[in-house]
Image (cartoon, rainbow, N blue to C red; front, side):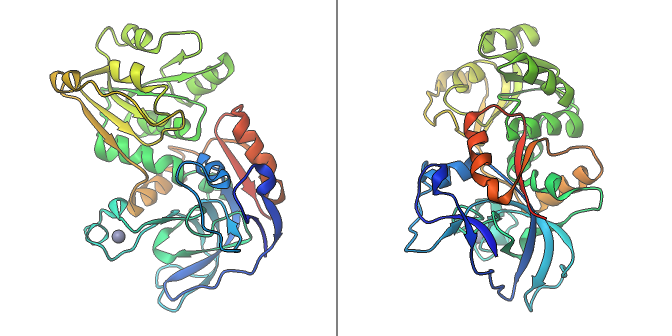
Length: 347
Ligand SMILES: [Zn+2]
């Protein structure tokens, strides 16, 4: 099969387009004919071997890409609810299904979990193997590109906003970087699913306009404005009830200052750096909760797909690329000049 793979960590030149053997399915697996694979920042880190993503290649090629949608091509002997020909999206977080967390339905806490495209062979290829438990059928109304844009950006937003922080319709959310995949997802979950007020940040007028079109009530230009001051003005001195932080160090000082009494601070990414100072006095006086989230549960993705199928939320796609142009897609992601998802497509 055609695939884009790496045999060592490096720059975009490390991405090789070539032939690899098709994956074999185990009894509980499905083989998916990939039609679309969305990029995530994790792909760039894994390519470079940065942020704890180093791979022991042992001479074996590694295929990047976690967020996959396509058609089921083959199913293992034990697979019951999925059949060949089904249109599906894949949950890239592969859990053990045996530990106490998995058995309790809290599989996001599984300590033996792998990730498609980073610890397991991923979706920059014609075919990918995944456990049948990890695929969700998608409705006709959802394109492959749309479906592939959902898992890695919507799962953490869903976990933070719906299940952990329990953002309410009468509350206010602060979420940074409206143009990033998580930014576009978080704005929509807060606005379209919950009905909350949304304050976001971005770096240009053009991006601010797109953020408003997505549902943001207020947009702060973090390059020219003081984020904490502006949040104070917008909320009449109250601050925000929930922060969905996916950028980390650069955003944290202003965001934690902006958190209202009883506020909840969910972290699901640290693209700008992973160290910050926690003012514990402020934390207990203001009844703050600070918590971390990586992805979500299998049922979260089913709920996300359901609402995407109804048009309540959508993957915001900046640009699509052919599989062989994966290097170009990585360059675009590293240039930071995009709004939404970059997606590889395969005929
Ligand atoms: Zn487990």
